Length: 167
Image (cartoon, rainbow, N blue to C red; front, side):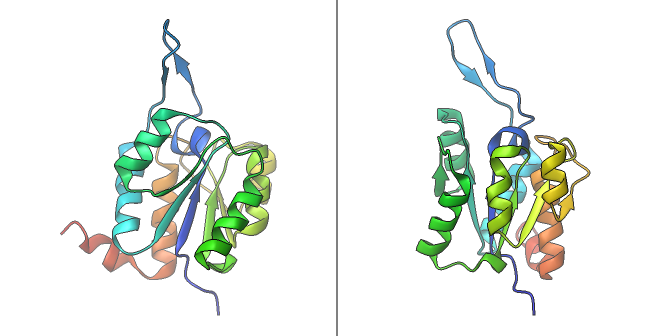
């Protein structure tokens, strides 16, 4: 019997955002996040699940977004995402069968090898789409994370609980 997904692993650039990184004339970085993804993540957390951000870049903006969403497990500047994912699962006692990941590019492949369920945004690199269990209709930063969560919630038979959070 397949276990329910209890933890989602999120890449940032290309999944939670469209992958664009903008700097103003003072070198201040900006990113755009999708509000539907945010609502999906906060609801996912409210029904008792966990979310982890593992990203290759380091950004105060990502730190702020994680805090705003209630994500306490944030790993930035990661070179080996597979190793970090394995460590967090070991520390939290989470089985790989309870983990789903979303990634969009080559540095995410290792996470797909660990998690039981892999998702790729519609605009992900072809090698990631090949590894993914589900290629989403939405692009990164355009609701891909929300589509992933909705898919998992339906699969987990948590739809009623997920919807009731906001009623």
